[in-house]
Length: 103
Image (tube, rainbow, N blue to C red; front, top):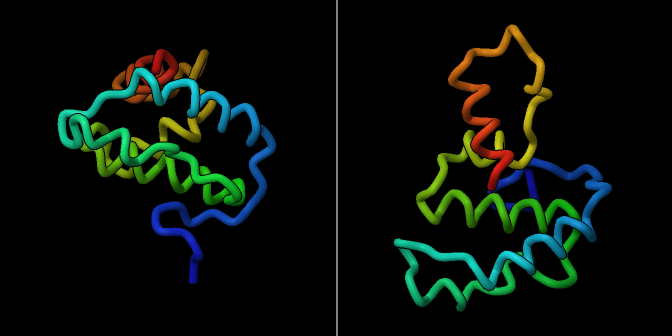
């Protein structure tokens, strides 16, 4: 059994503080075609007092329920492969990672 709703992860995320700060900084510029003005009711996206895995789960849930990305795409965005300089990667997949790197 996994304690989190979306992420089957219970390991350690070493960049937790930086990731939480990055997410909080983005809350002011987020928009949603699905949630519209009610998006602010979801803030803070990363719940205070949660574990590193819980923070990952919070963001993964937002990316998925907001209709922007599928679950596999959201995981790919949050945990990207080593794609730069990988001549063996499918060009469409590399293009996704290039797009995701700009988000």
